[in-house]
Amino acid sequence: MSDKHLSTQFDSDLRGASARVMELGGLVESQIRQAVYALSQFNAEAASKVLETEQRVNAMELDIDRELSSIIARRQPTARDLRLLIAISKTTANLERVGDEAAKIARMVRSIIDSGASRSLPASELRLAADLASELLRRALDAFARLDTEAALAILKADDQIDQEFDGFVRKLITYMMEDPRTISASLDLLFLAKAIERIGDHAKNIAEFIIYVVMGADVRHASMAEVESALRQEGR
Image (cartoon, rainbow, N blue to C red; front, side, top):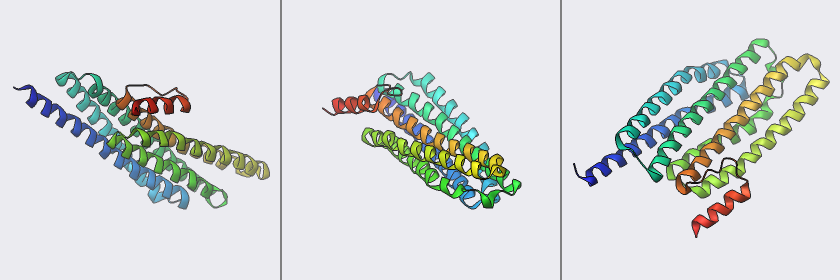
């Protein structure tokens, strides 16, 4: 078998694995949309749909992991190809965890509905942060499909906005509980909801960092923003 034929097969394997990640990403995005709707409307049916999707997300993660293991064993990739496969594996794991966060939101929404406290809590203020997190994940997946480092950098910066929304909501929630101690239990549920939303943004940020790793071969997970920007400028020269 010619080297060119082997290379063509390997490229096909890489495209197939990348396509599977995008498929998983689309499924997880639908989970988030349902979870955000369930939260904003306190809709139990939408929450149940999120939980129904959870098993499909978990099964896809396992399928992609098996596919990646097979590719590595058969092709023995090196350099950028190996980095891409590692990044696909890590992105898959992060997407599965985003699905877990969406399921967590759905379960908490159902708990708040069951408690009868849904009408009196300021859950609508979480909608902005949830929409920001959902949009950030969509942008991260789009950037990953194109291996766009500039888009990845923009995502790293945008994650700070979600963190600010989370901090502001926590302050408001503490005030709310102080004014009416009867809402403490349900308010704590909202606090965990806010944290789940923040974590979705964190996973989108992780995916952006994997893009930079694939393209540049640099691990920027613990680098400052200035260091990341400097590395990208050097790469562009």
